[in-house]
Image: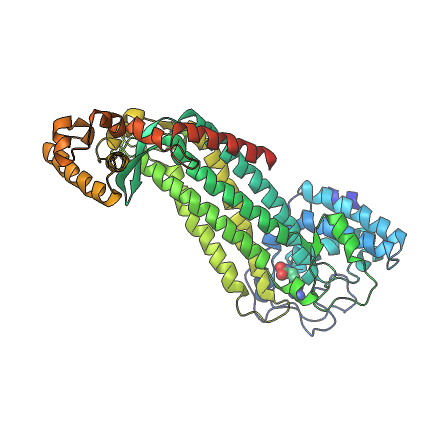
Length: 493
Ligand code: ARG
């Protein structure tokens, strides 16, 4: 039977473009026993064409076909083990599903709008291939617990793939941080030069953000990985099912404990979208910095030409399109989070068709996240600092003023008093148009007699970063330690 199907024309067909013909639907003359009948005996007339298109989800939920087939096979094996269907039926279902998988993989499967969604398309094809056994598959099950299972299976796999790409991005940050552990740049607060930091330290800040993102995705996975199947439509089923067996076969950690909750809540998808939004927020901040650093006014870094684009009118331009687009994509993913939250809010128990709207935002969140992470993981190894530009900028903003105050504290002056002394010294340097390090010792002594020749080592950028050598500090030695810790964390994951 599969070969008959395979000889047909190859194109998968989903008619989604047909104009709705309200009132002009097919006359209700087809007998209720007709195999081509598109509506059940409960209805007097076929569904309106527009309604059919409006309610169908096959154009997008067919992406769940792999999960749907896996879920159905586990369900069928359980039904057979529980003697709810015969071993013969199970064999037929397994055979049919194997052909369907091949048809889908090769693009020969004919998706039909009449069958509404991925679940009914596959079930219909199964019945066409293996007859009555196909009709028995849905025993003790509903599309409500089926779809919730499929989405969880799909998402679990995607979370694993996304965590792996995140690790690659983190590994490239570790490499760069190790390489640039002692490159000094200005650290900013309020977008103003604040204190010197090392470029490696700055990059490691993003490593930390992505590490928390990876943790969040892992936490979320734990709640995604629970089995709804067995909840049936909403109340459970009268058949003697074995949910534990299905959970084990499908690799779920636990069962959804309440049937009403199992078919209705999509909090696991919302949680994923929230975790994804945070990844995008982090990437967006990183992008923003790359864009600023690349601008000719800063010129702190370069990124390879293959991640830039030119302007159609201004020949001199090299634009940071990749980071700009990633920054823009954050809006899209945050939008999906809001869409999912709004979709859930106000839904009474249990399943409602509203939930069909969970798929497109979820799928697009997954696709976008995978893309942006992949592109970033490719771009980070190409980021090159321009140390002399970073240094020049760090020297412009009295970045070592706090160091001078700390020095004075070391000489027995209370911090608040030291703060005031340095403020006056900064004013003087400003007046002279030079850095603190360029003020002569005599001038410095005017502000405090405690200042001696040993102050010089406190006013240099290198001295400043090297002294911040406690865990979490910007000193090159700590950056290297943080990189080593990061490598260990990544290898354990
Ligand atoms: N396509 C549907 C969805 O995504 C499957 C569940 C349909 N259930 C129902 N009772 N109409 O939610």
